[in-house]
Length: 184
Image 1 (cartoon, rainbow, N blue to C red):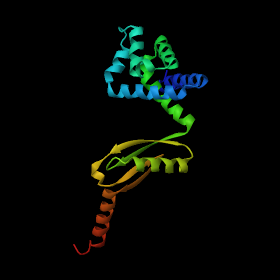
Image 2 (tube, helix red, strand yellow):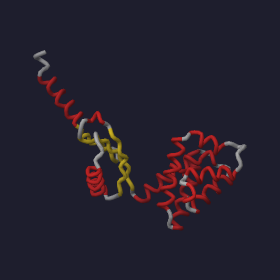
Image 3 (cartoon, rainbow, N blue to C red):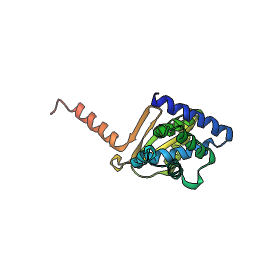
């Protein structure tokens, strides 16, 4: 069976169960933590798919990777179900699928904000403006890039706005070269 189909079905079932129990946001946070650990620690995926490792050890490992002893019973039960069905090799994709389904359900847009220096006021302002324009929730991933000199670059819903000093200087340079091409 296709990886995407299996992962999406399991993730949809988890989302429905979490909604029923009113813990979908908690499960969302746990799936983000788990997917982060899958990305940071490649050996986690190898350990989970290792046929020699006992199911109870795999469950303990997954619970720890999803947030430790604070993991809700719904997430724990989901891990048990995945291990019971021998679908642990799809678990990383299931976590990603759950995150996508949750964001789709809650109308959460993901964006990236790159600034030259940390600026909490700018982040708050841009999140508020994006929320007003999109009529949904916005989660901005923040990145610091000192080469921008100043300003920011925001990418949201396939649109990119570059208001950095570096791009403005480049634009001025290009205009100067274009206007003075015949002199050179």
